[in-house]
Length: 299
Image 1 (cartoon, rainbow, N blue to C red):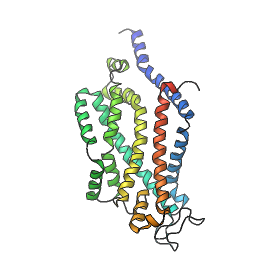
Image 2 (cartoon, rainbow, N blue to C red):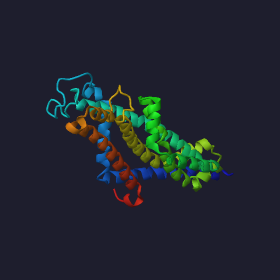
Image 3 (tube, rainbow, N blue to C red):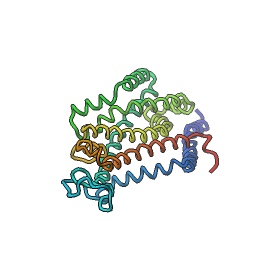
């Protein structure tokens, strides 16, 4: 191989990186122009900030209070529950726990799902087995199995995170695997193999960056679904009773009978869940639209 060939080959291999950077800038410009994208980002950012700063915003609700089932007022913005506890404080501290479950369970699901997807797409001998496993997992009745496992293992935060992650990774694998399969046969992947790149290096430097946009969308959607799943388990009494969550607020309102007589006990935690899920969905839609080359023209 001549010196000129050795000089040209790395440049050819690195060219997709420069193209990806340029595409990222165009995607960001298109995302900013979307009327739904930035407001959704702001809502999610505010919820994350509330969860992180919960101890600075209000004290953790505990014990009993004299104002039982008080409607929203200047003293209690979101009203009080059947034990006189401030629902605003419950929602704030519930944001912290709900965000923690979303981050931890989605991180586990993304890590496992991306690993299985990339290995199956890159090593084609394993692709059939990976596809069969994903199809089998997606055909299972997820909610009844989640309830069964959570009930048998006992209500706790680690169990909730593990159960949600265990049933979330197949959807991540299905989406990322489809994107990875369209990349592994491209010329620059063949060039990376020709110059002697190891499997790990090719996956880390080329395959994962190429599927990064799909992974980003999967992170957002998986986190929002994790919040819904965690709220559902908590509403059934299958979550950690020592920590507040949006689902626990709804569970205690249902158990006390306040759900039908005191509308504020369920309205505000439900609005918090709705805000996160809708914002995450709008973010993913805006991001997918921004990645469309037809929407990337202009500045």
